[in-house]
Structures are given as structure tokens and as C-alpha cells.
Length: 253
Picture 1 (cartoon, rainbow, N blue to C red):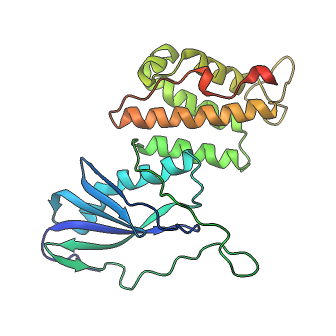
Picture 2 (picture 1 turned 45 degrees about the vertical axis):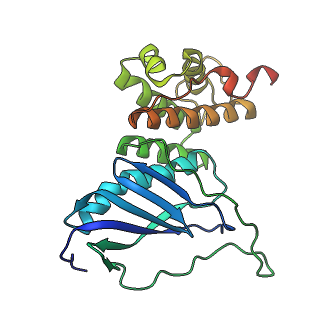
């Protein structure tokens, strides 16, 4: 569809997920791109700066949309496949539906009797993070490994550790910048480098020692927290300090 004349002032996105919500409270907020409200499964963004083209406006808000979706995944929000699908725009008072048709009804998961499996009471909170393309790619890579796509979880997790450490100039600087106890990064480095079987280890070791279930859970929690810290720092925030006490206790295994 061709772009319309007039300045773009608002964008509207439909919530696209497989889990229904039961009258959740709206989420309102404001950031550098403008003010936003998620209500009745519609996200409305009123732009702080008007754009000439709808495509330009969508490009402007895309990092915010992606951050919301990724943060919900990292934090394990029970809403499955939490996504926003572009619906329409408002240009100087005129609503333009770029989809060319009415939005389709969401297809929720139901049991064999046709009843909804469950409903959620709250939307995922608005993001406090920002994810650059390389952080987004790192999360996607880890998520595929977590769901056993073929790459060992140690390899994907170690890659994310290097994503954190390399730009900072090393582990010590990364720990300081990201507000993470260096012992957390040391332990993550140890588990991802010195554990594994013949098929999962990152490198040949004198004796192969596969990850325990407790160690795998620890890595998963640590990686999710590390990514949140990376995203929050990238957004200009200062995360709460992450220590070993915030992660599963490995001394109990």
C-alpha cells in the first residue's frame, strides 16, 4: 500500500499470542519515542516526533517493540509467543489501515472440549532494556540451543559471555560495567569451558564431565540475567547488582 499524505502521529499494534488475557490492567508509559498504552490487546504509540512516512515511524519504534518481546521471553512470561503485529497508523487525524483488512481473531490454545486452557491476569511489563541486532541474535542462538536445536548449550552460553566481555575489554571491566559480581562470570566461564561430554564439550579435556541438571539450570538463569543486564545498560540504565546469591545454589548438588 502506498504511503499517505500527512504526518504520522500514532501507530497501532495488535497483540499476537496464543494465550488469552482476562481483563488485565492497561500498561502506560513514556520514553524517547513517545507515549504508549497497551490496553484491550492493542498497543497505541503516540510519537514524540512526527514522521513523514509510516515505514519511517515503524522503523523508529521497532527497537522498543523488539525489546518488549525479547524481555518477555527472557523473563519467562507465561504468555506464549508474545508478539506485536502492526495494525494501522494515524496521520494528522486520519486513521490508515495498512494491513488492508480487519485483524484476524487470535487463535488461543484450547483443550479437547474447546475450553480455554488458562487465561493470564497481567501483560508482560514494558521493557527496561534495549537490544542491538547482535544481542538479539545472541539470544536467538541461545534459545535454539536451549531447545536442543543441535548446538550444545555450553557453546551458545559461552558466546554470550564473550559478547559481554569483548567490547568491555575483558571480564573484570565487563563485571564492573554490567553490575555483575565477577565470580558469576568466572563460574559461567568455568561451566561453559570445562564441562561437557564428547558431543557437547567446547574443547578436549583430560576427563570429560557432563553438566549436571543443577549446573544446566544455573547456566540458564545466569545467561538470562546477563542478557537483561546487557540490555539495560544498552538502554542507558543501571541494573541492580547480580551476585551468586541471586542464582541457584550449586553447593546443594
